[in-house]
Length: 135
Length: 135
DNA sequence: AATCTAAATGCAAATCATTTGCATTTAGAT
DNA sequence: ATCTAAATGCAAATGATTTGCATTTAGATT
Image (tube, rainbow over all chains, first blue to last red):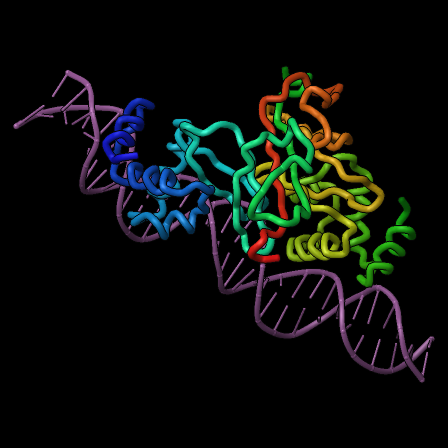
């Protein structure tokens, strides 16, 4: 994805196409797995950490980026546009993250194919919704 | 569960049956949904926050308590002993947390029965394991 | 029951990630 | 070229969790 296209995408969502945001999106587009704040700061010439946090938040609000939670202390960010619903599998030893493109809710654990993982030791599944007393 | 039984359980795991831990376990046993640190501090005469954090950690290490992550800023604790594998459904409006006793991985979203929730707006499922390069 | 030691506690200070206030800069509309 | 709201940079604030260290306590040992 080229800078120009990224800038257009940003403008379409009503946010300004600033250097910081373009750089962030470019970095996330370049990676196929969700990046942590630290990884992002490493890859992108992060102008300053307030900007990093603020930009990520606005990208998430704009629906361009998705926040992924893989346990505590493991907030990560990945591109949201052009991607369909998916989950992740995390190596508890080295932290490798791989996408699971099959929505596992529709299948069994056995159906999860992975070339890179040999053992699945745990999983976490949470639902979010509106309870009857709130609806 | 009475104090005496809690103390015995603690001793069985090799940890000391101190007042702080007995109180924590008693509070968690009394509730059927996972409690946040704040809720715990409210329910238990928390002696001091270092003790709270340290005690929770040792209870988790001992396998007595389980740490539940329902999104960021949402670390919660629930009893682990005497409970089988389950997930949770969270109301994004009021925060109500309900257990899902059916392991949803083995069923479809449609199979999730809940008396208290009317809409499921989102879900999160993550796997943890060991990747081949680590195994 | 008195003694002893490692484990647990209390407290205050440190740490770490994230957020905020505010003055300055900049994107992009006019 | 001008203008304004949005975005930025910086430094300070915040909030949750952790740590160092001196003191206390559980419970094992006499």
